[in-house]
Image 1 (cartoon, helix red, strand yellow):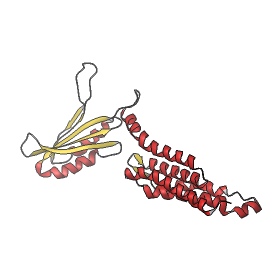
Image 2: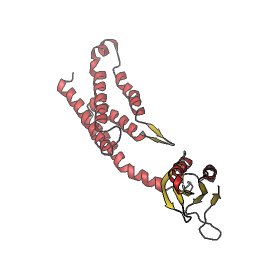
Image 3: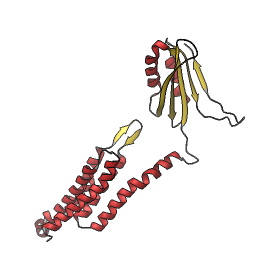
Image 4: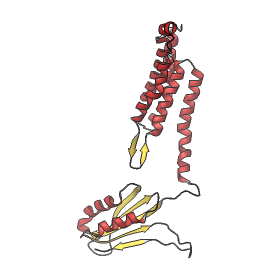
Amino acid sequence: MINQWQLAANIAVGLGFGACIGLERQWRARMAGLRTNALVAAGSSLFVLLSQYGFAAATSSTGYDGSRVAAQIVSGIGFLGAGVIMRDGLSVRGLNTAATLWCSAAVGALAGTGLYVVAALGTAGVVGANLVLRPLGRRLDREPSGGAEVGTDYHFEAVCAESEEVHIRALVVQAVTRPGFRLRSVHSRYAQTAGKVTVAAELTIDRRDDSLLEEAVSRLSLEPAVSAVSWTVIGNEDVEDGQEWSTESRAHA
């Protein structure tokens, strides 16, 4: 029978390895940071110890398999991981944090069984993956393969009466803010006509769809204060004549 100090050592090692994983998460200001990962690892260690030694009498007399308690850690941690996964428009946030919690539980379970070396290697692997693979993943996102579609940049602007600038600015943001679009900037400048202001926005879409911009033009052209609306594809090139060109649509009130 393992003594109480060895049990305490297993718990302490699980807590420490979980804290090491959580340090990186805390440094990056993620939802599950130092305390969460440490508690997940420590809790996994406690459950493993419970399954191994808490039911020793039942195991010897009835053949009870205490490892079933530890097996529930794998499925139970999924509920905690689901709490940090959130949907933000078309993207999903928190998947990496949830996976890190899952790995922290595994490290804690290893520490609970006394496999310190394997737990240490697992901790190093998790921290290394979050530190080293993060910049690599970002670089791959910026360098799509030859068959992948490249995002299209648009310039959208509306000319309106100076007195209605705030109202039109809000309408422009509303018109171009929709799923799949990433609004990069919105600014205003005085137009060439006295008393007029140009409200301009720059946005990016993953897959080119001019119909969405045409719809925005139609909506803004119905405003009495708007005298002109236009959109332009930024940085497009005409392959035939080798000169830069832009697709532009204008609507006048």
